[in-house]
Length: 140
Image 1 (cartoon, helix red, strand yellow):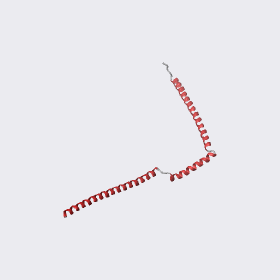
Image 2 (cartoon, rainbow, N blue to C red):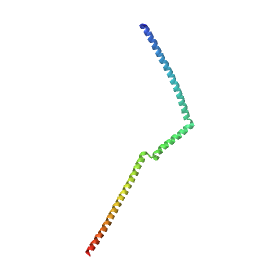
Image 3 (cartoon, rainbow, N blue to C red):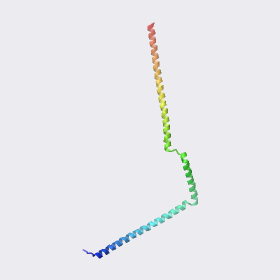
Image 4 (cartoon, one colour):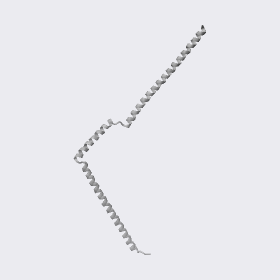
């Protein structure tokens, strides 16, 4: 077995620690370089897009579109029928239809009552005539 002295152990530890720090520094430098390239590329793309968007022709078109959008937002509440409004209108119409149906049912019931009453009166009238004939026949 190899025995290391205190000084040799410190020297080996120092070398490993130095290599570890150097390797981490190397990796950090590579990552920093890659990130700077990506950021530079993104800045160039953003600059190109902003120049393309705000060319004189495009700026006028964007202003026109923005103006039309603002006008549409102003007109929208007057022309747009919200879901709540549609439900309210449907509920009102359904209530009116139900009221008409109830009135029709009541009319039919009244008509049936009148018909039943009329039929009963007609039967009572015929019965009364028979009784009168029978009474007249006994009286003679």
